[in-house]
Length: 88
Image (tube, rainbow, N blue to C red; front, side, top):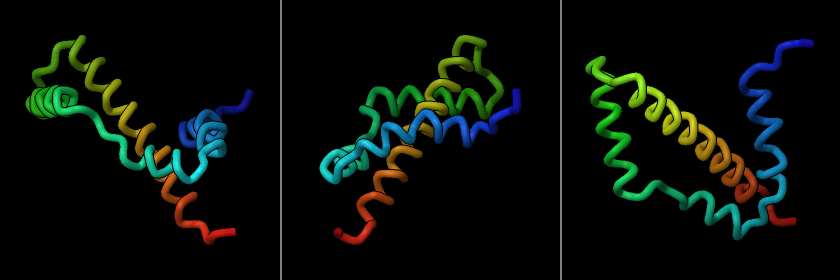
């Protein structure tokens, strides 16, 4: 079995989602952001990470936030591409 790069794997997972977006859904997706409490938690974990002070549990939590941020960011980029297409 050949190895699939992380980018290709993410595309395989996210393409069915992004291809089903209409313009209204794309606009809503672009506007998504974490709530204040979540942003504060991520900021706290980021500081601890930079200081090398995360517990193993905090590291897993922080890595999950980072991974989810990347996934949402990729979907938002795909939504922006959809909205940038000329009207057909």
